[in-house]
Amino acid sequence: MKKDNDIFNPVFKDLHQKIKKSRESAQEPRHEPLEKKNAKDMEHSLFQEEMSNVIPLPKDKEKIVKAPGANLRPTHPAPDDKREVMAHLRGLIKGDYELDISFSDEYMAGSVKGLDRKIMKRLKRGEFPVKDHVDLHGLTKPEAEARVKEFLVQSHKMGHRCVLIVHGRGLNSPDSFPVLKEGLPVWLNRGPVKKIVLAFSTARPYDGGTGAIYVLLRKR
Image (cartoon, rainbow, N blue to C red; front, side, top):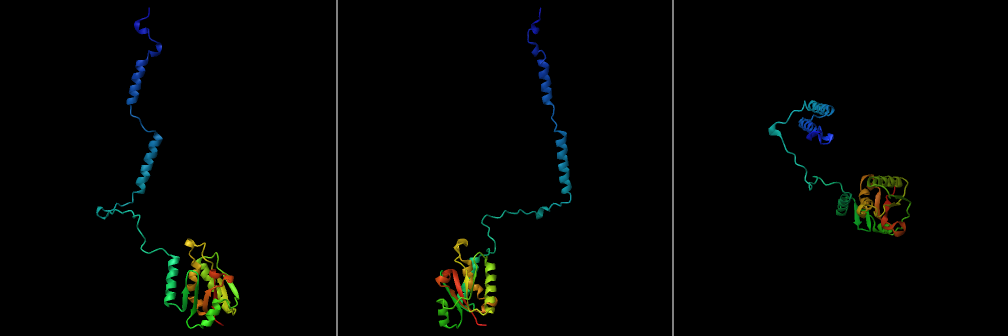
């Protein structure tokens, strides 16, 4: 006959021993893989080597650098084409320059002091024949100024009296501000150009209207 303890399924015969071994294995400390441990040791060694020549700051010289505030502004304002042009125009109107200037959003004109009024009226009416023209569309402000200078000097050398400068209305400029148009009175009053320009005026509609100016040059 079978004993009482033999009535169970043989599958459970070694169950007690298996549970004991499982508990002993769980209590054993687990170690990191050898490769991972070596990598950490190497990283630590490299860090210590790189920092070997670093000298810590004395405690009394340690400073806490504050992050800049969101409202922090530069000590000097950024360059502003509009501000620069308007400053020059104020100088022109106040008489700081040689040309007498009249200026508005749509119209501008200027002439050297003492110019005969009849000559200025003829220029405004478009009665002087235009001998040549230059178009400033697509140029930056520095490029346009250089082009105007070159064009006027060359026109004067060729003996032209009246020429046309097409500056546009500034519709494609930031904030629709006509940088080239506003800059022209300044450019005509400095450098070699101011010695050869007698007057300028907004062109008649058939010559470009508020997007162009006539420039009257001195005789050679």
